[in-house]
Length: 290
Image (tube, rainbow, N blue to C red; front, side):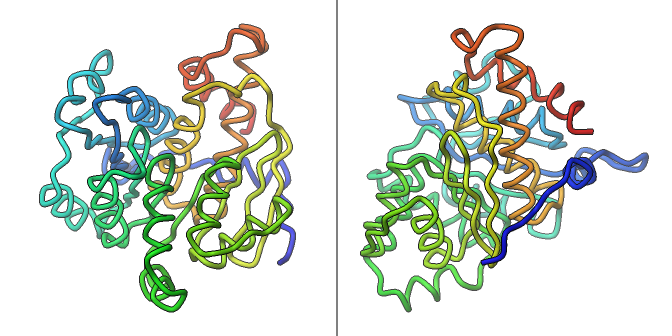
């Protein structure tokens, strides 16, 4: 795999600024599928991050008993209860638009519903980010299929981005019967087996796929709190919806996430930063990157 080198000018050019003729749909539609009754906040964080990252229209599909909590405090969010038929119709409708899907925040990877929602997202052929519980569902899907069957399921789909932390990456490796050693080996194995761009999260985030790799070194310990991964997934989904290719979306998304965390830490200290603060500082991260 070839190393990818991004200069500050490269990243500045990737930031998707709206044009004079853009509207809410042309700026990118993000469908976020997540938010169980137990964890509605994960979907809310991802959705707010997507909005702050430029998506023109953000819609959340959450568990029926989570709709009120996901919508609370953010009137601009469109929130609907997840329903397989309604979701499939909506994704088919947006297939010809600038759109992307994020599936997984606040879901249970062992839940049948999560598996069904993941399958619908994959079938949509929209650029898709898989995070949190949906990573567990993807690992289970892989464990049930031969490598050839998994290739047939994922190989011809639209761009796929996986955003696992180390534990989730190990689970994905178990799904394909692999046990690689180093982080770079893990990311390469997952990218190849799942036909995906893999952003392996950590103090330094390693992005692998499409015969390329990139190490994002601007991480901060201020981001080591529950919920910041949901923020990252929302940022990446928004960039995909605005037309970036999957590798660039993962690279720029992880950079903006890290810089937002650093900006928040400068203001609030690395002790006190919470995911909502990271979202609030996304505009500053974009300003710095411009």
